[in-house]
Amino acid sequence: MSKEVPVLNASKAPDGEFYVMECTLTVEHIETLGEATTENRVELNGYLSKEILEAVLGLTAKVVGE
Image (cartoon, rainbow, N blue to C red):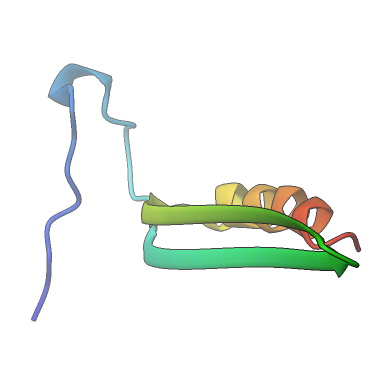
């Protein structure tokens, strides 16, 4: 089964072939110190190219403190 990639503005679609992945990504970091709890969460759902996915993974690594 093939899904179509949504194009918001067809006149701005890139020329030639391109590849994207449908991604669902959730990154969560919970830190508890005594009575205080800090929670950071990033969620992403959508179609991403390899380059964008790599950039997003780099940014989400900061959420978990790596």
